[in-house]
Amino acid sequence: MPVNINTRMVALLGKPLSQSYAARMQNAAYRAADIDMVYFYSEVENDHLPDVVNGIRYMSFAGFAVTKPNKVEIMKYVDEKDPLCEKMNASNTVVKLPDGRLKAYNTDGMGFFRSLKEEIPELKVEESTFFCLGSGGAGRAICSVLAYNKAKKIYIANRTLEKAKALVDDINDKFAPVAELVDMADFEAMKAKINESDVIMNNTGLGMISSPDMTPIPKEYLRSGQICFDATYNPAKTRFLAEAEEMGCKTMNGLGMSLYQGAEQIELWSGKAAPVEAMRKELMDILSGKKEV
Image 1 (spheres, helix red, strand yellow):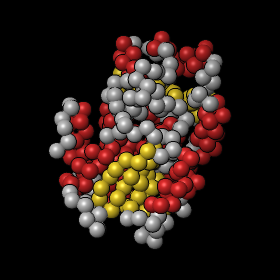
Image 2 (cartoon, helix red, strand yellow):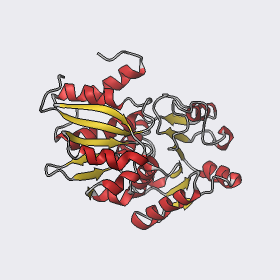
Image 3 (cartoon, rainbow, N blue to C red):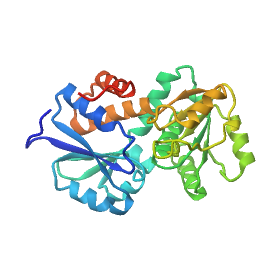
Image 4 (cartoon, rainbow, N blue to C red):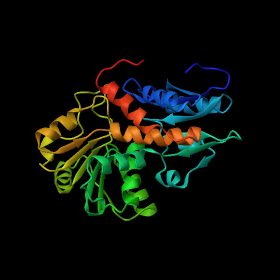
């Protein structure tokens, strides 16, 4: 779709972005739905985030997307917050309102939940125990939506213990008293609580293209029959997921989460229904190695 004076821009702010398929998926959706927008990448970390956000206020943006490491930090620089997003204290989607104000939303949690129900339809969330590795923006969104949907128990561990504790406190105070802190340095506790859990979720970013040989836990912590989720989708199978399969676990990567959270983003930015099947096809083409048209 050609860019003209009326074209509105959307940027993804974060770093690194080399692993992201978002621009290709989003731009394919805009073409399919005849939406006059263009999506592009801008590598930005927390230090320069306020300057970039302030610049967006004065340009032809529909809004912007946010990824690591900015999902929590961005909450300082918006004017309004969707109620669920405010409870989560993390945003992946910011809409520029007609009056120029910036409103924060979070579509990550809902994207994850829809993907989980689609890929593992037999899972009963209210009867299941979850273990979340990582308490950044994605971890916050996922744990929040699980608590909102009456998860039985959510264990949370993070490299920085204080950040994990903050998320545990937020979940218990704002959603339901179902979260419990686990110290990553306590190997026996980690192994015991992971073994107790039905679903293990890697939201640390370890295993992305920038760290393909890394995994957040030894595979021996896992047991057959568990469900293992990795928010990363490039590579499609991280070391964490490959080792989970070796241990007899069911696995799912972040591709479905990316699809459904992206569809909701489009509807927020454009006010039009997202062409989900066109987006899914583009993602499948990417995974099969098909070049962009």
